[in-house]
Length: 279
Image (cartoon, rainbow, N blue to C red; front, side):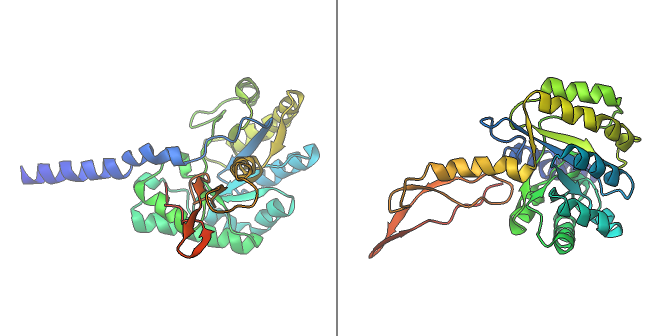
């Protein structure tokens, strides 16, 4: 009886830590602002010495920018590919160190997964990543505080043409074009996660880009897509940024910026109050 209760308690604690944390994913970005006809193509699970290079070739031919959510231990094996991504004007973002599901990571392992990838990618590109995508979109309660410490924002997606089930290239193109919308973040895979995924991606990528452009969409990085959200908050501030005016506060990792009101200090002058952290 005691063992059964302990097991039940442990199961409940794990459910709250892993499944319950998904109640906080409202703090994760799934799409950008709808006011700009732009879409971000994103690539998970790389870098791959063969397939990521082929994806970069297609992007270069089409003169399109994108965001690459890289696995740290894979990036350490092909640093030249990481540098090519950054040097070509694409965004380097984090997909964790080992691609281990955060449902299977305690707080210490979660910090290690995020911190190691953050530092390695920053050292390879000269700029630390600003965005993080948890493998398979699975989060836990420890992830949000770790992202705040490393000033990263959780980014999920609004369109995913292929997940765990293989999807033919032509069908992926049709799915993306059918579901395309302003501010969409498209989740693609340039390395083996689902078997054969990068082969199908390379076949789908050029017609996908052509189709989106024919529909009038600009292809941008996640950072460029989300800038408008931050700028729109800044535009809400009255000129002068004085006492009593609404100003855009810096974003915390994992959440968009928030508008706050300046309050006067004792003895005059105003300064912004520190934003309270949010997931």
